[in-house]
Image (tube, rainbow, N blue to C red; front, side):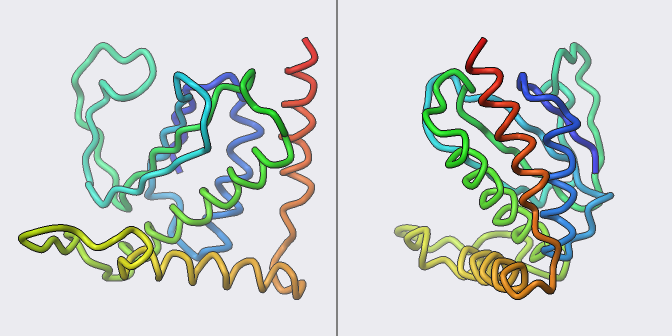
Length: 173
C-alpha cells in the first residue's frame, strides 16, 4: 500500500489502521494507493474508492510534476476533519475505522470482478443506500465486525486507542 498522508496525524498511526482494515476485508492491499487529506472545515470522515489505475501526482503532497502514477488495485481518498474541530476523539476514531473498512470493501469488490463502471440510468442514479455496490460494501463491513466480535479476527482496539490518545494529546496543546 502506498500511503500519501497530507494531514498532521503521523503515518505510523494511520498506516496500521489502513493495513489492518484492508487485511480484514481481504483486499489485496499492496497494489492500492491511499491518499489521506484534511477537510477545510469540520464534518465527518469521508471516503471514496476509485477503480482508476492511474492518478496524477499533482493530487499528492507538494508535487509539482504532472507524473501519472499507476496502481494495479485502484486507490482510496479519505478526507478527515481538522483535529482541532474534533469534539470526541473516540467517535472520530470509530468513524475513521468504519470508513476505512467501507472503502476497502469497495476496493475488494473491484479487485474481484466488481463493476468497472458504475451503472447510471438516463434520468437519475439510485439513492446511495440502494446501490448494489454500497450494499456489498456494507455487507463486508458487517461481516468483519461480526468476526471481530466472535474473536475470529484481530480486534483493532490497541491501534485505535493509540490514535485516540494522540488526538487527545494534540488537542491539549
